[in-house]
Image 1 (spheres, protein in one colour):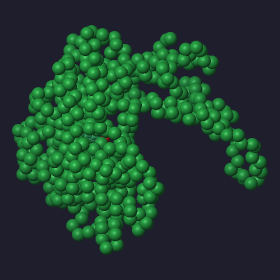
Image 2: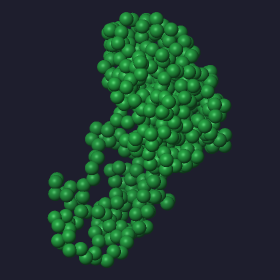
Image 3: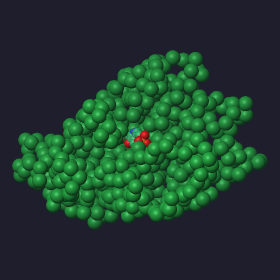
Image 4: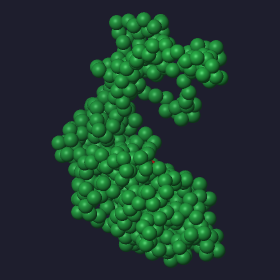
Length: 522
Ligand SMILES: *Cc1c(COP(=O)(O)O)cnc(C)c1O
């Protein structure tokens, strides 16, 4: 078996024509899967249809002059194609998904059943509002849960992801600053922040000023205070932070930010660690996005869909974007028009054409109602317990830079345990794939070298965590024993092996061309 330039065994037939040899290059029961256009043959079809006799006159100018290039396959071929493709994905439904910062938890099937109820699934955003009172009631009820859990007076529902929610919050802050006639172009962001934070601040027109982290993984409060001034519009802070640690002086930070006339944006992606235990409103937060697709289940990954509602403080609530959901004598109503605004409302604009992700809203509310406030609190506590179990079970063989105290919902390791082995964080992560696990988050946060961030969530059983710990302990031992080749060659058991990640980002090939056309173009 030879290897092609992607490091995958060459399929027989790939280089030498269409006939299959004895060695397919497929592994176990996982098949290499071509595109459906490469599989199809002209003239093949899933059904037998006799030639339909329609006169040319009736078709008029619409009669096709040439085939349109649909792939021709039988029904079983089509089914197998898509099932095989689905098996090339790793999913929370196929195993533990330890990505830190992502909260990859189990998505209860109950939520799916609710989201598929025709009254929710078939609703259209342009329906007359009196025909969608049920859907609007559901959004209103979800808003009540979000404001109650966060202790904040208002929430904007239209942002479609965490990053979109950040933008919404920062645009509200920009509008509030402008309304006061002030100029505050600077935003302070800790160096441990998720990349979306500085990107959002810059996109909203601010300049980004970094706050250093201390050696213990916490934000340097003295450095933060020293940077505050009359030109600072906001501080963007994540709590628990991206090292999995709770920033205890958060009230002190909020007070200093407010005293300087600035606003406090909190990245709420890690709300799964504290929901039901701490209300961000009590901590002095002015704006915080909630990733419904992280904290409140609802499937995510692969780029969406998501939902990132933003809770707003009293000071920012007037600037919430359109549409506004109000409840009056006639029922629920979405205000889309500035002429109808309630007193005091000064929306900065709108985030999207419609009012949010209905399917995500249904799933999130189903999660909340089925757990109840107690259950949400229990989920947060169990998520923190699971992460501490991982930290305590691995810190003797993997290096944990902040492993002294307990962590919150994620356990952070660095690569110092690999020093001198020739194995990198990337190699270690790739070797996990061969053991049947999706890698943890790698090289984030940037404040530790070769970071490995593990978030087990509350939805893994102790047995599942024990298996995972056993595998990581085994890999750590093999790395230290000097089996470099096993790591550098990993993954071995996947249809695709090491990809050129730089080329994938810089020179993406986004379009498939028929081989004949490709050759002709070259
Ligand atoms: C996931 C995440 C975001 C961004 O959320 P998206 O929904 O992916 O846009 C922002 N900050 C942190 C800390 C996150 O983990």
